[in-house]
Amino acid sequence: MFSYNKVQELVDAAETKGQKLWEVILEDQVHVLGRTRAEIWNEMEQRLEVMREALARGLNGDNLSVSGLSGRDAGKVKRALAAGRLLGGPVLDGAIMKALAVAEVNAAMGRIVAAPTAGSCGILPAVLFTAADVLGSSREEQVAALITASGIGMVIARIAGVSGAAGGCQAECGSASAMAAAAAVEMAGGSPAQAAHACAIALKNILGLVCDPVAGLVEVPCIKRNAAGAANALVAIDLALAGVKSVIPVDEVISAMYQVGQALPASLKETALGGLAATPTGCRLARELRKGGEE
Amino acid sequence: MNILDILGPVMIGPSSSHTAGAARIGRLAGIVLGEPPAAADFYLHGSFAETYQGHGTDRALVGGLLGFDTADERIRQSLELAAAAGISISFNRTDLGDVHPNTVKAMVKGKSGKTIDLVASSIGGGNIRVVELLGFPVDFSGQFHTIIIPHRDRPGLIAAVSSLLAERGINIAQMKVTREQRGAEAIMIIEADQSCPTELVEQLAAIPDIRDVITVRPL
Image 1 (cartoon, chains in turn purple, orange):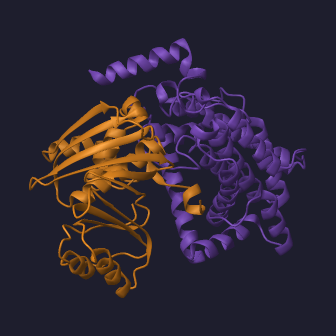
Image 2: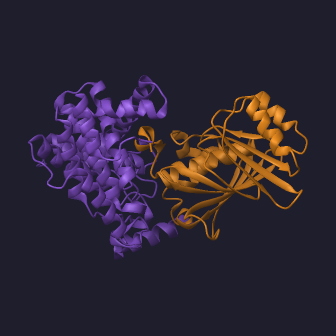
């Protein structure tokens, strides 16, 4: 369990104690889990390592999914970026590429860290490693950023949920994007309040996103939504670092996400009955995959 | 939800419910069997039936049966590894009735001819619920140290089990007993905070009318 029900409570605790968000979160989890600070730190460091390995695998090989429906796109971005054919530059395009890479490893049955879910596993590592490159962050700072991301994620999970089946893609890729944004802002030297604004802005921009996977698989459109989630996090990060504030307070945004998730029909919550899954092409692909499986 | 759940599990993709949860169900089946498997038939329900190949649910179930955890990359080759080990595997689409959409019934036979069956659901985030075990309706998650005790129902047997656990300082978090009818076959599922040492398993197994003692570490 987590002792905080609101992001604002986390921010208040950090400001009162003169600490970073990650210090408040780690202290709480030491207490709640009854494990030492070093044990929890090591667990998070191992997760960072799994993320790094997944990214390396995603960038070094062309990963094709088990169904054959997706894959090999991270390599395209990598080559185009190297050739100078893209507009976004190494930060935006690098983040997009990394998010695709990790999400493709997931679809190809590689090892990943669900962050917070497997379907959204590319966003946090993409943003974290991109920001760390820009900032020259140490390994310790990256582990600390994972802890900040976790604290934000735990509040969202408690108040709104992080499953596509319950809340749509906003709950998966939206949460991942918000977690990543807050973590990177803190890693960049932003205040706890700025990290909270980044979280709010990232969630607001992705509010209402439906979960409509073609053939019910974590591939189309999930992999590209990881790229979009990473780009969205960069938008939120830079707005927050520039001092832009979310007009709607972060915890109200999280509650709004829950309400929107409740209002979404079941057809748009991971059932593959609506949205892109229900397009003529989506239906055809689902039929072909099912038939192919029976042969 | 704690910090290790929100950033986790560390797992083989692509889906925490369809892959990581399935691996845990397979692993539980292997532990309950307690010997090398010779054959396994999986009956897949709902979303498991619809998408099991694309999600690698089949590979995860078999990988789990072979003892692989959710993060073990051998899950990808589990069907080939099972074939090489001479284990016959089948997957069947079925309707298990009013159960969670991601539910599977596993019927597994060991090298000695011993058979076990279980029905379990993957309820999200890699978490599972076992809803039927060895023909009995049950309800447990595998997140605790679990002690599974098939037995013949008689007065005093539950007290004998719980006092042995108490003597060893093992705290029972949850306990459920299900039986077919009075004085007939029954099953006890104990979820404990501590692991059950081998000597205790032997002591429990020595209690008259206890058929078997199966211990499962948190999956």
